[in-house]
Image (cartoon, rainbow, N blue to C red; front, side):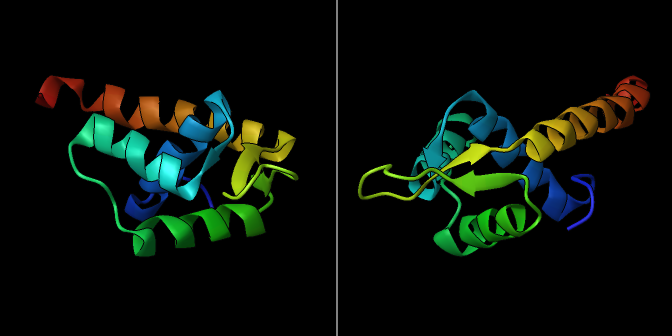
Length: 99
């Protein structure tokens, strides 16, 4: 997956950020994004991101989380989120005069 700094990575960054606050399922992530953005991403958008983040070792499934599969951030995911947040801020801080 690389870092969270391409456009597809932007959604990965948002997902990591949301999961860092509390363990969430794919559906809960979709609801959280809807609250903030006004529209809910499709399952076909969210679940490939969750799969990629899981395969990269940034998140892992929470055991015994009930019916819904929930995810939590791993130590590797915490490092990636910190790095991605720094990169995100650098990119957009450099653009601040354009807004």
